[in-house]
Length: 225
Image (cartoon, rainbow, N blue to C red; front, top):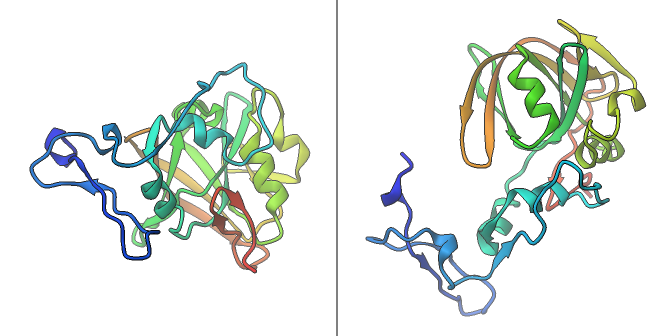
């Protein structure tokens, strides 16, 4: 359980090579690790704004979500393998979609998928007012689609108008070209840190290309070499 006592003062050590450092809680401390000076932190200098123009940087959204995260923790988290998918949503005739790498299975029976969505995203509001979402699992040669849905907001650009897609279920958009796609009925929404978790029961699934999934590599989308 999260609580004040679950956070500790950062303990930082350097290995013999001088390259690896540990940044984590020390026993008996209640100081959040990101408030300590033992590790450099990546801090936001420009707050996210609905009116800000989007940069051609895959880390644009990420840098505005994270206020201060110890770099060793962030760099280590990026080593966790993650598939890249486009999440589709619709509400009152408005279509939205975003690229997500924080996607995972949570149950086989019933089949459940979980996706983490940042609250500042346009698609987040659509999901809050919808009963379903789609997951289009991208394959290795769909870097362009990953960047389209990851770098631009529906507020500035109708992304679905630029790609071939189908409307599934009650009019939820999904890519026509991808490895596989799913239609999920939203069963629960769990507030967490800077993202909320949407848990959906898989109502239908299609294997289209069946090619290897596009992985998230660092802060960009790139096929395995």
